[in-house]
Image (cartoon, rainbow, N blue to C red):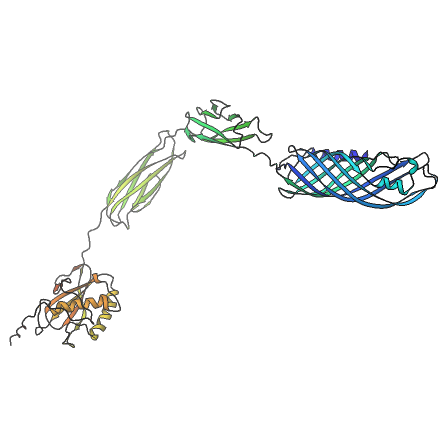
Length: 557
């Protein structure tokens, strides 16, 4: 009886305060090891009494079907291996006057069913159970046969009733596996034979539990929205609560609360908030959505909708001016500002920002420095802030006049020449001496970022004159080498071939910077039409001639 009381007390202590929070599987299948202290014989006569027990090791399994998160029905089977132990009956015992000694083998098999109560929280599941069923054991037939108790009557069958009451603990490893460190119980059995009235035994069980199915209901959620999210005091706000995860076939109920606000209703999905008289700032309307037919502890969700109420405030009114409003680059301009609050709130600060210059100062005046402004518009923005943090702005415009342009002139630079005297058969060809000169000339031109190279080609008076003079052909051939044949490719747009007339067998080079030529400076020759006189490679054929002309007359002596 003490064992029963202790087990029941332990079950109440374990199960009573637990709060269920984990998933509840529908099925639990356990594979267990068990050891039972089988109090098999409790025999008493007028002059003799003895008790015998067997410590049996075994195991088995159980199946538990959970009706809900707390109650289940458990079916259990346990089989314990045979153990032999010596048993002695002294002479003179009634029904066995000669006494006897024998090694009695015995085993035990139980099959029971009954309710199991458990609760899950965290990683642990304590439980209690009360099972009832049947049992079989070979102890009683063996005692009857080996110790000579035939005088008692018919041989026992080894079959009887069994019951079990106890508590246990499962440690949840994951969704489908738990470890059962212990199950301790009181095992009662009644084999109804002359050797024993009933049996009071204790039992230990431990093993692994495999769980399947039965995930808990999904916790519903709620979202609340407010439209518009910001209003002026007195303007209405519409708030709506939307439930998610509820059974669509169930009717939901709504409950609204809001501190300091008047609600058009408190039990509808959408309500209107009257903001008249509300204080400035953020406010919240809270909703609770309930499914009365939903699963307990999984049928309520809450949400809140935030909205802002603004009380009207008039910002400062600001005027500003610049004196002078037109300055030369580098000259200052004084900015004067004046601000007033329509709500009579004191003006606390003035701040200045500028474009087209740098501004410094505080209070109602500041100075614009136009140094670095090449000419054009400049502006200063004044921001006035009142004691409530409200701001107002104005802009003062300043015109910075551009300085008169500085007139400069450029001079023509002579960069050398090439002669065409060494190859009378090809008097237009760029020879090796000229090639070396042009390679250096290309590098020099590359080092000048601005300006153009003028190539002036000349024709000797004694050379044959055609419609395409040799001077023009020599200048375009030099350009062709600089832009195409040479190792350093020059920009063709920066080279101007010119025809200098009859002045010798050569080309001269002049570099002209971008800009206006100084007084007395001018370009020599005329620009060659490169569509009519095309450049030739120094390795190419002679240029085509339209027709030959008579040799020029020798100069007068």
